[in-house]
Image (tube, rainbow, N blue to C red; front, side, top):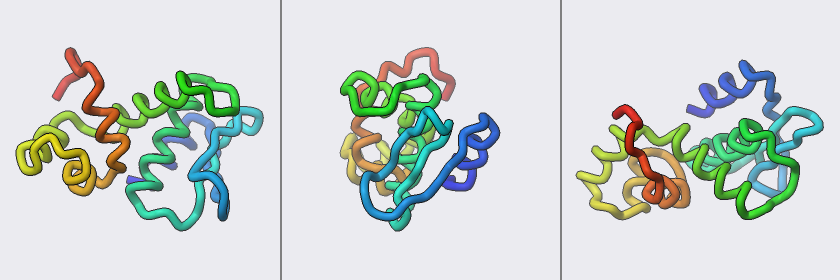
Length: 124
């Protein structure tokens, strides 16, 4: 999924760069790029790329305003969590975010965000 997210970003003209140390990720609007911390596990990397692509999608300025962070999280959750796969994981683990996250290969945080979304009208 990491490669698919990078390809989706690049298809939209967004560069994906890697950095060591510092924040998990950042949206750099002036460079039309996201930068992702090297060395995270796959779930963190996938979730971080999707989150930063949320900032890019919405044209957010650099920085960490709570409303923009929430919107980027919601974008990321919708982008990488399939309602069908979520439902199957919830049958197996109940509504417990940690188990569902492990099953889906995403962070617990994005599962918690997904659980708050109104998904009516979204095809399963």
